[in-house]
Amino acid sequence: MNDVWKPSVTVAAIIERDGRFLMIEEATSDGIRINQPAGHLDPNESLIQAVVRETLEETAHDFTPSALVGMYMARYVSARSGKNVTYLRFAFCGELGAQHDQALDHGILRIMWMTRDELAACQERHRSPQVLQCIDDYLRGQRAPLSMLNTHPSVCGVANV
Image (tube, rainbow, N blue to C red; front, top):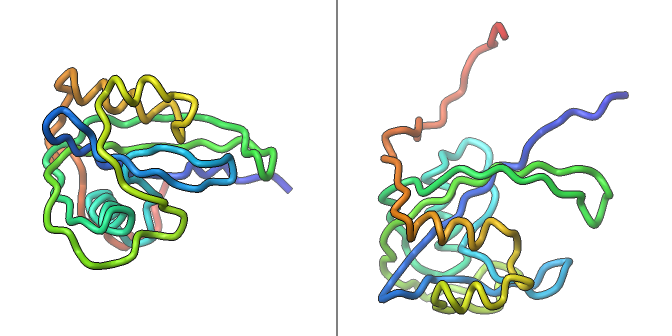
């Protein structure tokens, strides 16, 4: 039987305030790591809906995306299965909104605000190399309008591909 290749689609929120970026510290199978509020795209969810949901779950704050900072592909060997895994990450910048009185997602230890230099000084603790790359792309002013994305998931018929 052949393995079916399926990339994992993830989203990340880049939120900057006064030269600091909102980051999360999370417990992972590789130890405690630093990441942007981020996570996987769920079925029947748009990329915009996913980044808003993930930010709320991981920070207890609303998030309003304003632009797409970048799309990133990374390949890793899974520590658990030993199989190759491909991640497609969509990073969005935007505004942090209201804070809610709710628990943070399972595994999230805390939220913190960090400068780019503070992040660069602890790269060994990043969830992936994309953490700093997304920040650097944001600081360079890399932006694409959200209108580039088809943000309305729909159920499609059979494709003739």
